[in-house]
Length: 376
Image (cartoon, rainbow, N blue to C red):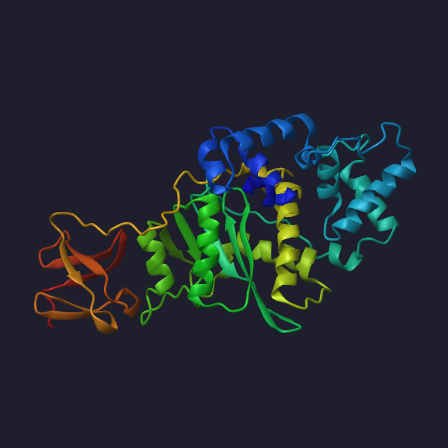
């Protein structure tokens, strides 16, 4: 029996939406979703012919009447708002237009309908403001990663881990975690990498478990990422706006999922996260994307996740040393402290521009520069 039947409808839709992107590697995409190429092409054909419902294998029927009356249009607007209480006039307008809702009122008219039916708190309208931020020019050049503030559930706490593609705002990971340990993040990232491939760089803050301080420049998590070939970037201390897109994503998550909700378990949190992530990625109009959903700009990375870490190789002119206990390494009769997370790994001492100066690297990652001319 084919194992593809275990994929939920939401995952099938995500697959075909990614398969519709230009220059997509269908063979690699099918492998990442655990399906055969034949099944992948079949799903894509069904989706093109019948939309989302065709992925169920059922016949499709029209969602809307072409002869809607004004009250029916208004009820449609209110139904979308009730399903997505944090959406405003522009998002609802874009959503209805994209889903062929017939006569679609203008954003301002939709906003008036929401006000008339008391779906908008007037005190919130006054504090809303647009967000404008720099973005990468292509998917997977930079991912942003962070934990949203934890919240209480009936049995413990939930720590939502979020990973967002900078270019497309595509939510790659939304995981309900029991803690914020390196091993927990590594398991979540492994699943994400297997599905979407590896990014060029990952942006994270300076807290645990990523760490970036004089005492702890690297952690077991960041060492693993560097070994995979992923570039590591840390936000500036006390400047969370560096991760503005992920911070904004957290606000949206709170408004559309967490507000006024009580969860019994992490499993319940994850079910809610999975449902909403599908809406966010595939349906929700995004203001920064000209009211298109993130799926319209995202493509999986062509760099596949290696199940076995590659060997660490350095250049023929590099002088390689193995890091000892407590992150210490010996070089030219001197002892240097790097990071305890590098214990057992080889690092390279590479000649710098000035005589007596050396740059220390772990894989592609520059750690520090030393000067043998200075007193020991």
